[in-house]
Image (tube, rainbow over all chains, first blue to last red; front, top):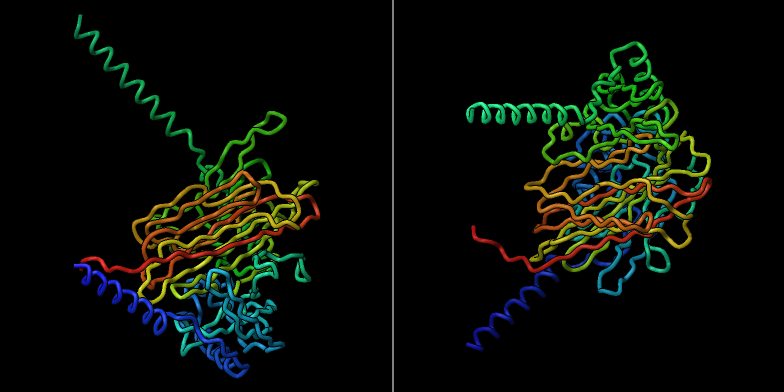
Length: 171
Length: 302
């Protein structure tokens, strides 16, 4: 009887290990190149200009947040007519957390342009590696590239905060 | 004689019931009574509001203003709102003893079909008075928090109330929202968002928060949350079973909302809004947290 339970326990443990490693493990830490990020941005532009929200949100890390951002940005009529200009790019480092998890790093493209209603935008289009979401191992936060959203990592003390000062964009 | 007594008693009970019903029916303040949309001044106010919001960068889908309603809730005190917004009026006693009506947005019932098709869903477009509105000050998403069993992505928006008449305070609303998902053979059992005043923030005082209470649902459905202090600000999320469990603290600006249930490799959302006032010229800073919890997924019987 005891042997039977031991066998079951071993099978469960192996199953969990294999599952988390093969299917659910964290994405690898290889840097996202500018070319990879730009390729995703080009795909996002094509889907947005085709008003294909489903395809656009397939690129996103989170479909729910993508759909929400699309609405908050003004829906289909606010989609920019022209592709955005990439004005800057930088790497956001991965941060290891005490409990074993991590805050996923990646490549930020700072993009600017005019949205479909003529309003200027600057958005941080963030591309990161993910086995669990996005397409072909890459996913995007702020895939609605005209939304005006920034991307943030945690502070030096490990906390997350809202903007520490009003910033230049305040009216 | 007994028959007469019984008949009198029955009539009395019926009369009391009718009176009570009438009183109860009259007690909610119907906002439709204050609707002036179809008057010339209402039409003008709606058009001006739509134009002003568009100029402020909000993307209205109702440029012809047919989806807007205008209410005169107090003399020369106007509320402009999406036609689909569910608004109640409350009588608020003022310092001088007078009574003033104040609008309150109702947290949408998950079964409220109006909100599922709200043409202004997820936008912040409502303002009473010509010059009072919520202005977007900051919008950020955070890099993904991820472990071997799941992940959570969270974002926030920070709005400032523009045009209020309080000479001592400024008013801010934080909207904090997230999506979480489990991986592999694990199921998501909860996703939690919290906020509290950061050490270097200006002093905060409570104004409002939403959801006001726990929400339990039977299936995934849109839910609109909102803050309606002077002007109305809304956010629409999807709530899934089992529901949301809020914790509102007495400490100003401190709040938590938790989605709880069972979801295997399926996204779940959680969101809340808090409104505080800070000394005029101050700047509110919130410390935020986002967490998810998972357990081994054991499929139920087919």
